[in-house]
Amino acid sequence: MSEISFGLLGEMLSVMNGEYSEPDSSELLAMLEALSTANRFSLSLQFLDKSECAACSQLLQRLHQTFVQHADDETSVDKVISLKSVYNI
Picture (cartoon, rainbow, N blue to C red):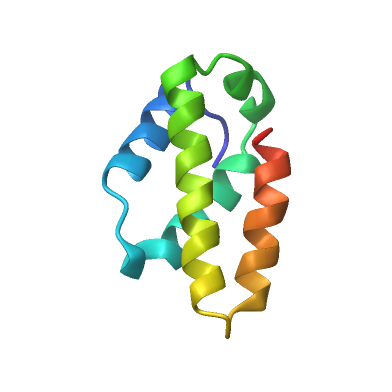
């Protein structure tokens, strides 16, 4: 992924949160990790509005709860905790 266009990060986070499905949690985690490495990620993060920030926070919390409930996946729990910091949650 080369860069995130203006406004796209917030829309993606809102859709991912709105369509959250526990069976897709590993794929969502991978997408959040990939987005965090894209060019202009930090800039895009700064321009999230309140509802997009809330969607991001809720999405990461849902992922955290999902992986904690399935205690056999400690690595994913650690990744979510790390991503919370990256996404300023």
